[in-house]
Length: 351
Image (cartoon, rainbow, N blue to C red; front, side, top):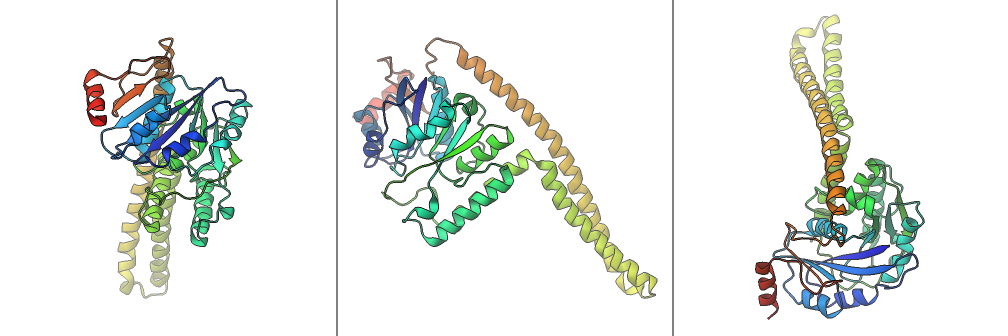
């Protein structure tokens, strides 16, 4: 049983060594623990800090692509490296590495395929009252949309079984945390949660600059992903609103017409007709979107099967060069699995 801890990093030279030191290397039920760093275009010595602290695998982006891209690249690399369980944590040492055994236990015991760490936000002293309320509201919204009973949906400390990771397809350019939960729930992946501890804050969040910006992006992500999985329900709701408004205006005109004063309310008929046509078009769009969603499910199923076949070839399952940058691995092989050109750039950067 192989566990890989993946850590997306952006300029984490100072905090990464602390994070790595807290990752347990001996876990009951796990034969091997390895670490993968996804360097998201860092401009400091994050890469050197990773190597100096014994990190076995590195994926490096030549420029910053964002947390969602870094997470996806890490999942892909971990799968290619033969991980049976993948744990995602942050490079700023927010999460307590000693909780990793607790996080992976439900997967080892077979009753969960994805486990999200619950920071017990109400007890985090560094969170303001406003942030705590917003976290609770956000978790409630995601629970309503996904049906997954999770108390802390924005926690980045989570574990995935190999099967769950194979089915993740991140499309959001912002963050993976909300999307992976909604996807997992809609794909009937067993989701659990475990209470975890957090460490004192080491730096401000780099995911967003202001709270309104974070709320806006999170809302867009939730709406987009829910619409992708439930298009007919979403478009039917919007279409019904337009049709209801059209019906009310039509009844209004009919009332005035039977009372003999309908000539002064012709505009109600015109607006009712326009709203009715709009509502009908929205319903048709919903039907088309629903058909497209069935096609998306078939494509995702095909992609899942192709991944399984691709990863089953080769005894060591070492990754080749991914599309997102370059990959370097020292576990079990002293030669880097990157093209010479990329390796030359790597040596030039560190010289």
